[in-house]
Length: 368
Image (cartoon, rainbow, N blue to C red):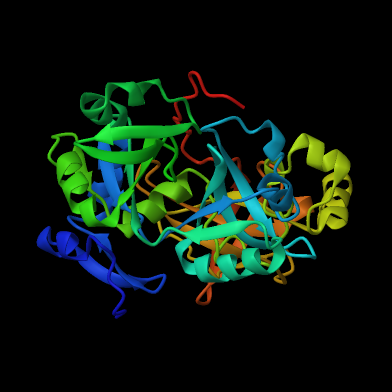
């Protein structure tokens, strides 16, 4: 197991968490059980420790234009305190990472995946001009409070938080601690991500889990929740061999950027938007009760491998197995019948729309 402990390591252990290695850290996979934790988040509010994520500040003259040379987002229309989902792209249009970028005063605040953050920082430093400064905020921890009652909990501590729209953030006082709070998350539920100094994160975690609506939640439920929400996980559903269009993330290519290009792999990506791709990420419903896991093969009618499952599991809400897979574009249509092969067993399945469980983001007051 990793020797790299995150700020809440002892906090998790004191609450009976089962710890596992993840992204180079020791992290909680569950407390009382994945199924129970999953359902608690869908019904109430769950607190996730996501301090393994990379929190970056991108600042300096020309930061906006410089970032647009690496991201397909239109940052010129990103208003103060607004977040945007975007992608760090390689020269051939592959996905180096998926991320959130926020305009915050005179700089951009970026949250990248934990397992890729060191590589992301190196890629940014190599490709951004000398006048643009990158600060890896190692002194900050990150929490996610997710679920339909998350807003009730936070509004009792800082009433103004309730006024945030989806994909909007701001600075708030939480129990005497200045926190950056955004209305965002990775579960498909309404929720918030909370950046606080690592030295006081246990106090904030205690403050939140002290509320009757909140329980700590592990990585296991985080994964099953994001799967139900149809949200891809980098290193599984996304990688440098996959383009945004193949991954069904075309919405991340802003309108102006589609017209002007100027981001890595623009020619290929814009070409795929117009002419299609060979494969596509889709949602899959599987017959029976047995889940099909990552790595299972997608088969055609003649038994040839034509695709691969990238995420799979049992949906606690649907009470059925679901998966994401890359399939030939001809099969990437609702209702298409496919077969999956795993450990010598064949499963019958069909392509269905994502998300598998409807998103419940709070879009009231949310800006574009």
